[in-house]
Length: 138
Image (spheres, rainbow, N blue to C red):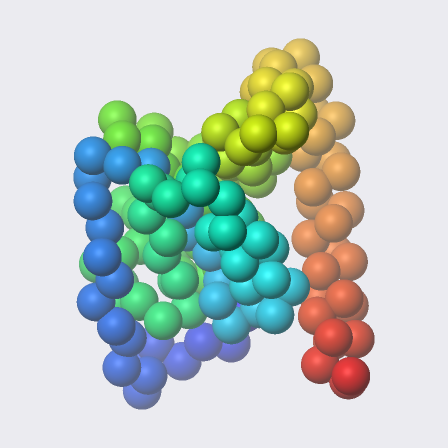
């Protein structure tokens, strides 16, 4: 999580976004997040996705209704129709496209399981700061 981004002094890049594709918003300043995104980007089935590093983008790249800190705090995916998927549902969107992961992506979309998945994801978010700190000490 990168909640200490100084939006007043950092010049952000104008990030490419194509509204006709699925857009993944991620925290490129987070080493754990960057490793995961690098893993996804290596998959041919995900080559048509638009990847937006929110830690290095202009405010105009941030989805409507969200702040930079909110987008950096959770995983977000915007579908071509403008629907925003966050947390487990966002991962599900990506995983459904990946060979070997599609069944997990479908499971992450099951409505009745959302409270459980959200609980697990929020637990991970608490651990993420600790994991990132440990990664920085290596």
